[in-house]
Length: 305
Image 1 (cartoon, helix red, strand yellow):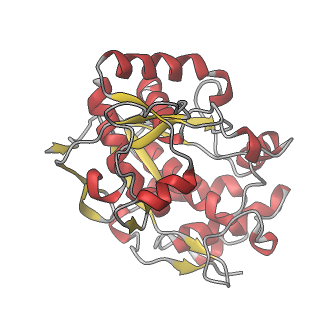
Image 2 (tube, helix red, strand yellow; image 1 turned 60 degrees about the horizontal axis):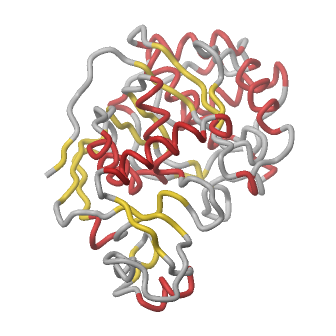
């Protein structure tokens, strides 16, 4: 059984994808991670997850950086861009290959769905068709990692004890896609380890991805970070807030303070009413000083405003 252990010195991070402007849902994750790291005098790093190039919107990364600066969220060190780190992901992939943990897969998405023993909340379960080698005449498309039958367990800072059996929930999962791009699961594990991140605070939509990352960390010899998943801010249609929900994008310039106040309230913090229209730096300073993880709710809620 693979389990996480607690870390002492805190290095947190925020890792947005530049697929659009900073909206309320991503502000919640940014502010929560910032407050939790700074509350104990820790570092807070910034990473732009621009590895999935088809989803990258031109200029979105710079817009996100400006928004964070307007909010008074100051990061430590240079911004890390995944698109500039493919050599590090390739090196990790080669390490796993040398250990005999990965294999070439020739299955298309349609074939994976057709052969799946069942479909979980993570999608169709890979049936292991290419585990023993590619059938004659088949060409490699993606690279997958062999998963064990054991449980992966961890204790989340908000949602408590969690466990997952990778074999039955996802199966052997992809580390390099058919289009040649490295998968999110590999990139985030390498980035966090090489940046010294030991506190991962993010949205609860990634809660079910965590066991895959813990498994990869064990395969690569990395120490697992502490995980804290925050409740998702939902739009009026009940879906996770995304760039298509223009009405819940955060304000610009000095108008960001009310959004910061709303984000703290959304996270269960008792931020005073009089700070609703205070300068952004004052709202953030209150959050850093008073943030209480025990008050963070586990239920997903529609964002106000």
